[in-house]
Length: 85
Image 1 (cartoon, one colour):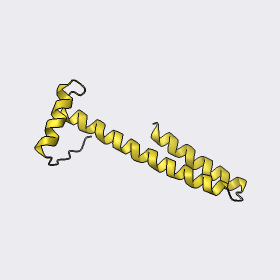
Image 2 (spheres, rainbow, N blue to C red):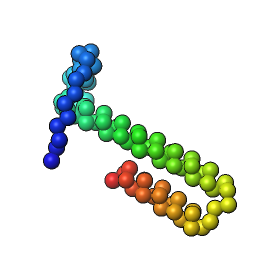
Image 3 (cartoon, rainbow, N blue to C red):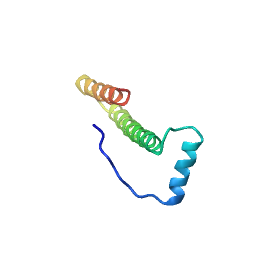
């Protein structure tokens, strides 16, 4: 079930959305906004995964136990699965 979200936007911004819709890239303003939000959320997930990988690399430079390595691998795998579902 979809939930409605209402927001205000400057006319110039709406005109840019309308232009993208008219150029045939999207069926409606709603489709444009949904895709924009999806892309933004995907980028946030990607940034989070990169930060976790960087943190893991730092951990790996120290004396890491096999149990810690397994936990790191599981965490990374779970994040990748969430991203590509």
